[in-house]
Length: 257
Image (tube, rainbow, N blue to C red; front, side, top):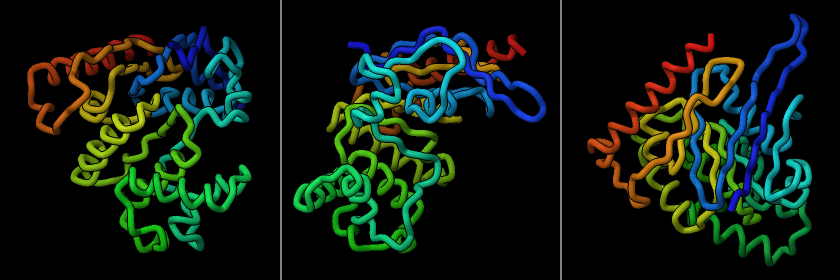
């Protein structure tokens, strides 16, 4: 079942220095339950594409549908949660109250807010930290709290814009493992932006390789790795072969320069 579909998508920004084409002729289908990573050089339109799906940017050509709706209709239907590069937690609110904020805005009852906050804190392994403030948590824990907030209203789609990019490798590895466990537990459809080839290969059922600006899709790689993936799978021939194909796709993308 296709939940996100892009057809011949173009997006051009108007700037003081003239038009800048961010995306060109992007077509892609994302199926229910997929974990799709977008990888490419800086400025290739990975985040822009994610923001179009989330109705945060408007395309100038082509179309995108989310659950058969326009992105704006999907936003109003609460079809997705969005996790930004920075955790974006309000420092004056506890972790629990940060998670409850979108639920308050949506008009959930206090009892429902409490239940949902407790459930997602448990999902991201932050049980017992709800009364803490963001500044009392490590960077990795803050990102997990941000993921919990995006999960709180139980949307079927989770959009993640390089959420672990600023973290050190040890913390990043741990959060990659935890994200896979969360995905297995919830069966959500995940769109994930990254600059890391190992991260993209480790996490994904599908890897979308993009060219330098204007962003085009140079390859869509279906992963045949098992859904249960210990970190040491990264040393296997199958993993290394996928990583090699991603690198080749990135090199091919420079042919468009």
